[in-house]
Length: 451
Image (tube, rainbow, N blue to C red):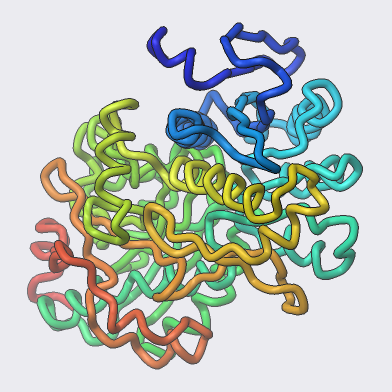
């Protein structure tokens, strides 16, 4: 951060798990600030983008006068913590404990990896800390709110969308690829392979896939489950090629996403790749993989199309500041701080117990979609609502160094998606700037004349 920015955001940070907080002095007085914890695996993009998004929002909010509660104006103070959640759940718990008990924060943004966040929620509950999730998707985090509301009511998931409904959306993104295989290559019974992280968040995908794809006339040739942190997927990709797959559906949220793209491109696997690869949604992915990601498609929370009126201005500002567009954690953290601000001003209070009902009324147009939470009384209260009128991700395809939006594309979803619970209405949604999906040329060449 440039020196001139220090007057706008107080940034308290610790990067090593055992380290103490380092305070950067500012003109703001302690009595005039609101401390907000920002937590995630900061050595990885997922955590770094949480920090970036929160930092950008804090600067904007403070520059516009901060947060006004009971007639008093407050500036935001960010307490940034590397929780090492990728590698260690105990470290993640320790980070949350230090935010709650050492830094004395009452509001935390971030969290990543299901297993770590589930454990961090216990510290949240013990200390009555508002926890706005910006990285982990598993429904169990919100089921805890349903099971013991008074203890866990402080948890809200700003993003990503919850695992099961989001799995339906990710699988729906295969529709343009299947259509291209049928219309361009005449393959009426596509063979599909799945490459899915061996991680708790991904467990709904194999179950759902084995129901949806056969109903669409596809044959599933196999489900491969590499490690969340795999350093090679050559064996899996070779097996997928040998199985005769026409399409690979990826579900990957770990750093191995770079390996998957690179090796798929290097080996020229004759199967179109789609699904979700979080690393592949980054603008740096092209350079990281030396262009081996060409023609792969992946899900992303945001693209340079008019998803909302805030999308393009936010992307321009974020990209200018950090040198790339944000992955989903950066989008979620940015929106989360504005949602927290609105709740504080609606409740006219900083007390976590008073903020809970205010947060439950959230109806906020974010930089990519409208954010609202599942109400109390549902199976997963305080979870992000997914659907064409609320949270909607897009499918992005890499082509010659650029990302193109290829879904939602205005085409009607197959009834199998709807039967599995995918919300109706995505067939009516098509953002300006959306283009047609293009099959990888080597896939076309390989399957031309074959079935």
